[in-house]
Length: 210
Length: 210
Image (cartoon, rainbow over the protein chains, first blue to last red):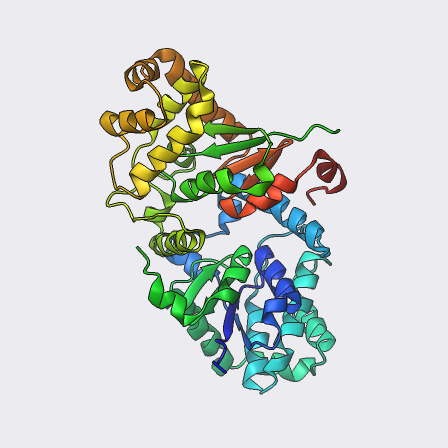
């Protein structure tokens, strides 16, 4: 039996399309029995590196107006709860550190449930996910002992780990979220999930980029 | 029998993803028997209005590198011919004017075949679509009398018509290509074609944007 390649799921807590992808991953039949590695990172430093000090959805109003409409349509079609947040983008820094802390503590199995709870806080309940109380509540919902995770999230080890993950994302060609990497192949956007799940190293051998 | 809404297909001759969408439209079962209105326009003025003097795929190298890979993958998966052009973006101005001329001359039924021929010139044969000889060849391939179409394309009526179409695109919220509009609803990107074809005014009534 050939080994099935794991799926790296790169996501940002501030990103509406990452919310959709996180929710889709849990329900997608192609994911069943497959290893999915949840890789939270920060888009802010990548955007800053190309001269954006804000989300492109704020910098480019037509693109932003479309995004809000598109996300609402997609959520309706998928039966996902959705409310446009009163502030955007919200800082995903603390949530991303908490997710890294879960991995460092050996309970990375709780990362998906925690991440979904953060997305629901941001994009359904309209809560500020930069607020430690909101992150703590999401940790509790995922069955974690929130205080110890938040303490760990504040350590230099975790801060450095998140910085390294963000640098890795940039080095590997990621420029937006969600992104998927399968067998070294990058896919951008939730609408590429089917394609990413179907990707095998044999495809890469047969299909040059140009 | 309820009338089926026409599909407006907004495209730019310089755009690789517009090539894919133009090719998909001809083969998509949901399009069968449905009226598709081909609306060529220029992205350049829309990009310039938000401060970009070049394609975002050139301005943002990570995004550009991904696009070339993504398009090659999609073409391979769809069985579409593809060669990365040696120059990008090429000006679609003359081709867009020629397409508008076809409509003005009452032979808009030839616009799809002409447009596909221009895309093949740009993205398979690596020809400069700003060259009148290349546009003339595409017109001939579509069965048009090239000289008279190119003469018409050079008139103030056609130049103004293309300018008006581009202004209309901007007014209606378009910010990239390809885009589809169905029953007043905007969809961006070839990967939204299924969703656009399934859209009905009843959806719009039931699904508020936020």
